[in-house]
Length: 321
Image 1 (cartoon, rainbow, N blue to C red):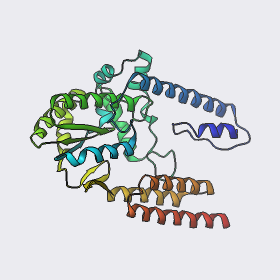
Image 2: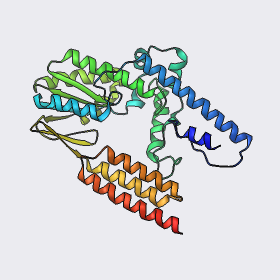
Image 3: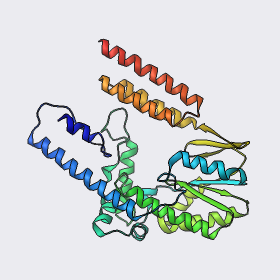
Image 4: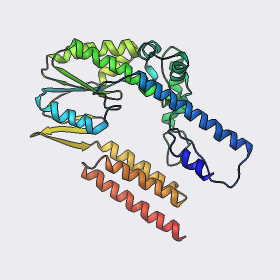
């Protein structure tokens, strides 16, 4: 049984097992079903990735934050303006037709991408795995409602992220082809454009809104417009929860306050609900991983150090009781 638990720990889906010396036929069937489901989803993901190539500047699937920051360091100093936005309800609003056109895949794989259960997403939880938050329940409800009208793909399903990336790839390519002096990039559904001249911005917005309407429906353009932000390139701008600014060839970063607060609250709740040494060890790993990606922020390091101290104290209290 311990080998099975180690194996499940590598699965991408939120599968939950408990240690036991014996288990019933019902549990055996449950584990077997989960293994089949996880294998099937892994195959769907691999097929989608093999058949669909994203752009080098789609940094969610190509290099992540380090590559994005290298791109900024290279091109931000020569830009005049930064335009940022994000697509509202990306997964819930994406049109089936755009997914079908973007994914040259056989029917069973497309069926998996379009129709897989809306509960496949990892729950947004308050400390304990498996408790659905109101935010996730609302998202699931929106997905189910959208899917009945020819739009919406499963949040967290194996091929969904690839499907969305391919549609966004088409949007970036259209903007690059129809505007001049604009560099395009994205991190998932967050889009960023570096413009050499402010005169390029109106054309950029026009193409962007036309493309988003084509792939996500005309009902999202008002909300999209509210999310559009134009900033002089030598000023600080916000993208994916991080404030960026270029100073004398150096990229200066500052974490958004809300991100710090939200993370601290989640860990605090987890500490209050932890019931074993293993729970505290998992929380410590989360904090360490979070800190590794935010070493640029002294405030984040301070918050992380406080959380690690609290985890250590509570773990010690539990061990001595």
